[in-house]
Length: 475
Ligand SMILES: NC(=O)c1ccc[n+]([C@@H]2O[C@H](COP(=O)([O-])OP(=O)(O)OC[C@H]3O[C@@H](n4cnc5c(N)ncnc54)[C@H](O)[C@@H]3O)[C@@H](O)[C@H]2O)c1
Image 1 (cartoon, rainbow, N blue to C red):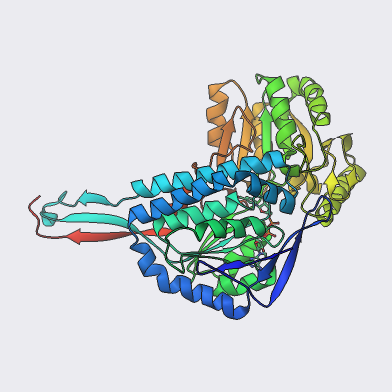
Image 2 (tube, rainbow, N blue to C red; image 1 turned 90 degrees about the vertical axis):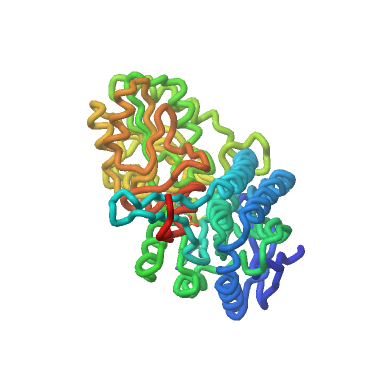
């Protein structure tokens, strides 16, 4: 099998070692890639630093056309890329196709947003002392962006950092997750087809322990990290003077109130507690159901969970595939067993076959069980009855995390109350917490992170406001 090059200052390059990527479903080799040497990492950082001024001054049409090109090419190569995502990640092809479509949209939004990205003019003559003065307020890139990304969306979460960086005219160095670097390398291939100057992007597939040097480097003033909370906060501690954005984990809750459409709620909770085998920061981990409809909800939920098709991720019918590795599945299995030993009742699943965990539902879970208070990142759902809406919302907030929450209700009042009271970055009314549109602001509170992504929010994040005051004008 060919060894894939990585991307160094916009060109393909090879180092002096290579790594193999395997399919978590069957252990088959998916591909091999070359690994940058320390000297090549230095070259990438120096290249990004050197091009930063030119990048910030790139005409809007150049940036917009490059982004539109990436969007078009991802769409043209959608089938091939979806198969690659599915193979390296173990994600069912159904979800992998969805991820590619989202990345197509993410780059398209960026191409549109960069055309709208303009300065603003403010009149300052609100006071007599400022007669004849005008401020031009623009946003300028803080500098090259270091994008560190997780394994669970190996394309679209890279897109969420690369697209806004290019849209504002900031060079970007991508450090993809070691388990799933190949999709990011294909994105590099497409970026290399554009007219962007050398140094605008590098994709460096490095193992974890070699990422710290990039984080430390003062020539990369922005670190945009998506991944687990312990790694994210360690990075923030490592470089307290840098601008660090953290998109971290969660144990997202869906609330089902007594007035909800129970058929819809049960279907959505069943699917989105198991999509990507639960390996999404906003997969439903806890479902909190108002007491009067608890039994009726469970009656609908369990058959919907049992009906999910588990198996080979390459099969178009598969809805639930393996976790990213057998070790990850063993950890989830152990957490489920610990909960059961502590008194939880297993209503579905609980079994493991290699890296695959059967869709699992637990009731009566002890409050301090890991499946209740940590991020499971597996296809495990816990059921919790609530005596009232107040108790339901308090249970959502009884978590160290706060990314998104879903509330199934038909009541506008309950919706606005949820928006006021829930300690999360996003409240999804009438659906699961797992909903994300790629242009909307996205991010968490508490241990779920700092800052926001979503095209416009990330563009703001990568830039600062700069004011130029013009004096002596006849306004
Ligand atoms: N909030 C969000 O937008 C969002 C989205 C997807 C995933 N996540 C979270 O990501 C996690 C799963 O992804 P993961 O297992 O790949 O996370 P991870 O924290 O293990 O790794 C994330 C990235 O950090 C790198 N890394 C690891 N150690 C590092 C270090 N010391 N210095 C610099 N970089 C280092 C990894 O190589 C990888 O690229 C989950 O917690 C999930 O909730 C959050």
